Amino acid sequence: MISSAELKKLYLDFFQERGHKLLPNASLIPEHDPSVLFTTAGMHPLVPFLLGEEHPLGKRLCGVQRCIRTGDIEEVGDAWHLSFFEMLGNWSLGDYFKDEAISMSFEFLTKALKIPAERFSVTCFAGDDDAPRDEESMRAWEKHGVAKNRIHLLPKHDNWWGPAGQTGPCGPDTEMFYHTKDVQEKGTDEFTMLSSAGEFCEIWNDVLMQYDKTADGRFEPLKQKNVDTGMGVERTVAVLNGADNAYECDTLKPILDKVISMAAKGTAETNRNARIITDHLRAAVMLLGDEKGVVPSNVDRGYVLRRFIRRSIRHARLIGITGKFCNEIAKAAIDVMGGPYPEVRNNSQRIFDELEKEEEKFSATLDNGTRLLERKLQLLEKSKQKVLDAQSAFDLFQSFGFPLEITVEMCKEKGFSVDEKGFDSLMKAHQELSRKGAEQKFKGGLADDSEETTKLHTATHLLNEALRRVVDPSIRQMGSNITKERLRFDFNYDKKLTDEQVKKVEDWVNDAIKAEADVSFEIMSIDDAKRLGAQGVFEARYEKAVKVYTVAKGDKVYSREVCGGPHVKNTRELKHFRITKQEAVSAGVRRIKAVVG
Image 1: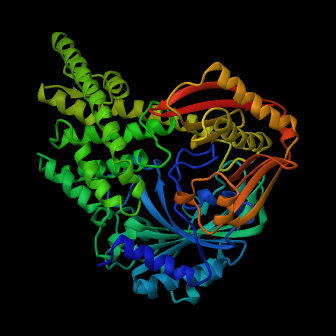
Image 2: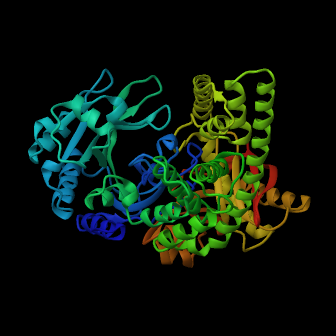
């Protein structure tokens, strides 16, 4: 048996021995990235360096990163899909490329993990009008002894990454699949079918960034070719230990066992519902326990967190878990995750408090929804109808968070049915609108480094320092989000800023702008950065060499902060700074929105 900790050590040791420098684990909340709500992969903190900036640690990097992905949330509950997971990764920033990346992948799988070569298959990009078939990757796999019938060519939908926005770095990827059963696929169609059935589990993906998608839709060769690889910890541990699902991993099994011990129903659906509760509450614990402090709300990250918690409560009701239960599951999750992520244990009280508040709110919501459904059924009874219309069922879902299965169950108990097909149509229409809205909101792309966001990024550094100078020297950043229109900055402070304080902060930043201060950076050791007084959450994010940006006019330093960029060259480019709004985010955390220009 192999544990998650053992797998992570094996992986990181393997790549460090091959010249890769170890990256620290970053927060689940991306810094200065308006395109995504959460860190979805280990490459997120590396975006500026994938685009060509010099990384302080060099061209070869490796690490393990906690991630949140919500695109497949409806699939959670099956064997392999997870919302929160840990991702192992190694990166080449313009150093090695396809042949060496695949060679190291194959060596780690077959020698370090001792997986028989005949137990996995690979996929490569099949080619299209934008880019040719990935012959290099195919030849590399064949060179290492992977049989041709286990090298499958798939289209862009399956074997292509990016660009994350409308333009930028992108390229083919090659994926490695482990056979959970001793099967021999006879061709690509059978491989696809067996993968869908869960008999092949993807455990590694080598993303091979070799193109730049231009604004007019062309794919041009990149000057700096990069490799971005990823291996899911939970999936890999599960399959190495002979399991057929990720929930047998040591960072999920104790939580799942706790959920099942509290369930009152032993139906065929218990396992799926218990998996959803396990995944969602572990994800909620990791978000609530994050050093940047996400709390439930009706927008953005807070909304996703609220959805995790409320979906857990809904599915708990389906397997007979009633009353408050979230904190019991959270304790199990903290026991498991508090070792590698001590901030989760340190913030346990906040986790318990927020989960309890959310349970109280949603319990009342469920009660109100139940009363509304009962009234609708009484009206149907009077009119001698036996089918609840789709719109009523959808209104219960949208307004009260009633999943369809609860509505169907309650109707069945009273002799009614539900127009489930009509509900599905309304749901699909709703999801399409939501998808289009999300695409519009985040269409700027990953790490948008436009002129507007670059200015606002530099202004954020000045705002951060102004708050410490004018309001309270203990203030520190709790979160940041930048779009082309405005900056949003969260910081620790327990009361509303006065009008006088707001004016003084604005004046301080505008003085730095009027001074026409230069913006420069140096790569230095972490100790030197601390000695210079550079701002940064050092214990959580940085190791060894770091990039320190300084805003200064002569000997007068306005800001000095550890950061990866991008920045303006001189503060004169900002023209004018203005705070547009301040508000409370949670207990002890406030938010400022501001603009420049």
